[in-house]
Length: 72
View 1 (cartoon, rainbow, N blue to C red):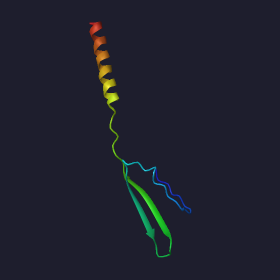
View 2: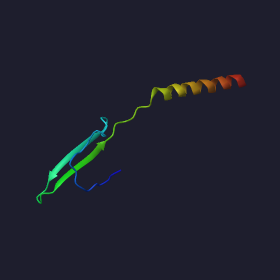
View 3: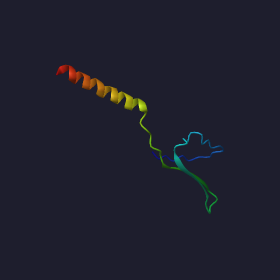
View 4: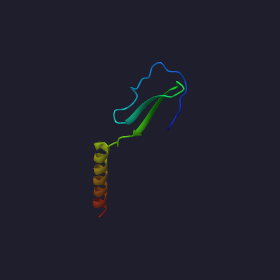
């Protein structure tokens, strides 16, 4: 999601940027004396699947196989 915020700022807090993000902060002073500050998120890091999901999946497969053995 891209947003543009226009206004005057005296302090910029970058603590909300996660360490897993790759970002670029650019400061430009153009010919008219206008300050431009641009923050771009270049890419995000992949989120690994927690081991709890793998444990839940293997338990579910075990329960399904036990139910099939009882039927036969």
